[in-house]
Image 1: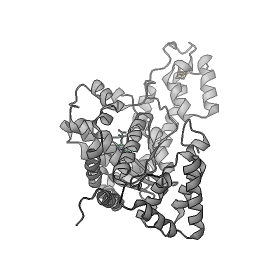
Image 2 (image 1 turned 30 degrees about the vertical axis):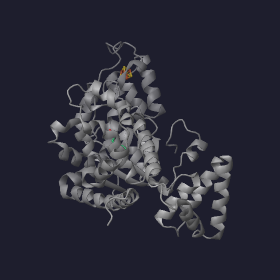
Image 3 (image 1 turned 90 degrees about the horizontal axis):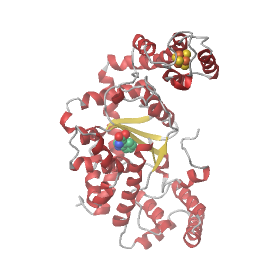
Image 4 (image 1 turned 180 degrees about the vertical axis):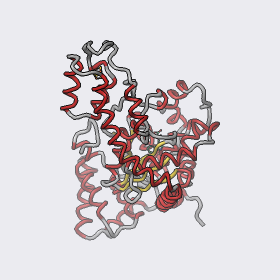
Length: 419
Ligand code: TRP
Ligand code: SF4
């Protein structure tokens, strides 16, 4: 399955960042309360797929909620809990992915602080969401240090796991780009160490003869001729090495490109195939438009929401023919129905052969059967909140173990917190 839009195979390969963290994914979601079908089709189904293909870290971005809403912090914990229940109900499997809550892994905040020291103010001010949100969210106080710094917090969320890929929506790509720039800057400032060349040469020797010779050759091809394929092959070679310490691996990644050590590798964003999940009114499904169907909505409520949906305004009476292109119900058929059903609806609509009530029925059935399994999974968690808290606690510990390692290296590179 192609997880990217607009990238050729070649570009995808060249997209690989500089170590085996390519196999690692991190993504976060703000706790905004119960999730809806837009989240399912836009994000969660993708995560459920990815969790079997990559090492995944999925977290509830509760600090992020504070950056735009510090005045209304009272529901954040409740929302975080519900968010995790929704993820689990949608099929995110804590046996396959690490599921946790951001504030339970304080290393996110610690790295954010460290990065804030080297983050140029101008970089943060020109992140598009900074001005956009200030213009859109009038009722919030966004003239804070925290709000300015939130893309940097996101950079810390990603870099703390040295993740290679970040599944995000198009609106978040600029944040991943900032993350790359920050990583590059950090490596540039702190990746220099006395005797770097000598240490790198010594590390080459630890690789084993054949691999070492290949590395040297590929490095030369890249440095002398800018051969991008050689660079990729050398990176893959390094990622395979079992006998190198993390420090030596970083050195050799850095040496390859002639810089210093690469302490924080640059991640790539991974654009999910855009699902245009329409809401009840045909606009994008979104809580703020009040046009959602909940992820765990009861069947009767799903039925009544669909039954009361507006249809093509031209179909006033049952005998008036309609046009599916002007109908939000048909937009849902595009997501939920197969060719046959769509064909049936289109023809029936245009010829007034079916009524809108008929047209809606297969949708009600499909949505309810999609939700059936989600509701079933949710029951065990609703009945036993401790189970959910245990998943969060365990995931947070697992995440912390990785995050601590990064933090140690970051501090050592900066020269702080040692003895
Ligand atoms: N900022 C993202 C959003 O609003 C959520 C988020 C926070 C995130 N940290 C992240 C996404 C790290 C990906 C990776 O949707
Ligand atoms: Fe919409 Fe279906 Fe009614 Fe046509 S028949 S207007 S597509 S609900």
